[in-house]
Image 1 (cartoon, protein in one colour):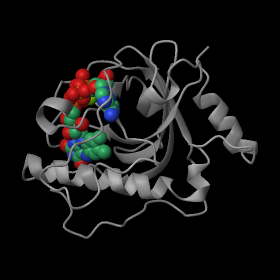
Image 2: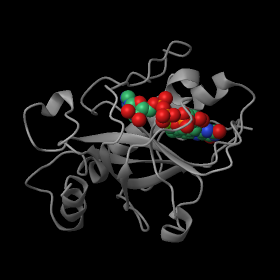
Image 3: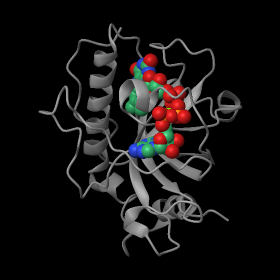
Image 4: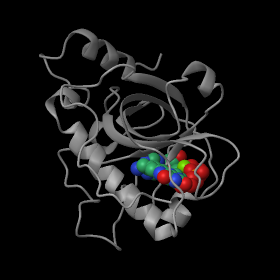
Length: 208
Ligand SMILES: Cc1cc2nc3c(=O)[nH]c(=O)nc-3n(C[C@H](O)[C@H](O)[C@H](O)COP(=O)(O)O)c2cc1C
Ligand SMILES: Nc1ncnc2c1ncn2[C@@H]1O[C@H](COP(=O)(O)OP(=O)(O)O)[C@@H](O)[C@H]1O
Ligand SMILES: [Mg+2]
């Protein structure tokens, strides 16, 4: 069952991602079980998890945060309309078997959050009526993801409401974690970005 302990507001070191992070994953957005939006009100873009355990043994099942980019050739975010540059957005994701649903195959599911400059729809105080971020559908679009840190293991829950509430808190933990300078640099392009961060960011937005 979900943990009863109070949750930490941030996850991972303040100084920035520590090995093995950032971890690069990419793939086309595929259909999942159709439960994210329908059951939970939380859309998750699923990407193939084939050979994940062999390619990334470091990615144990659990909840992570990071940044994503979608191929601008097939998807244009409202903030990048008319440009060919991929927009980079904050994300929270789950890798695993979704113990609440007892899946037999592992999935990688990414919930894309609004830009950090926008108010958070999942901030405390909206419990029971939280509206999670929703974009126009982008099935089949290529998605690049940089995983920057680990939040928690996956749990089973006593109720759907308890699962949704923990995912709401995950969104807040991801947001607060990414607002730190050593993580924000993956989201915001700046002259000061250099070295490994610049290299990872370059990979993130390239879709050739
Ligand atoms: C941030 C985040 C955390 C999640 N944590 C859990 C979890 O602890 N246990 C669980 O069973 N499912 C967890 N899920 C997965 C949801 O159950 C899943 O998104 C839902 O089953 C939708 O699946 P679908 O994309 O196949 O429709 C999490 C999803 C997200 C985005
Ligand atoms: N904020 C968002 N994060 C992730 N996917 C989103 C978001 N908004 C809309 N979507 C769309 O919703 C789809 C996921 O919905 P979901 O109910 O989880 O269905 P599925 O089970 O097919 O993954 C994504 O593939 C994407 O096209
Ligand atoms: Mg999904």
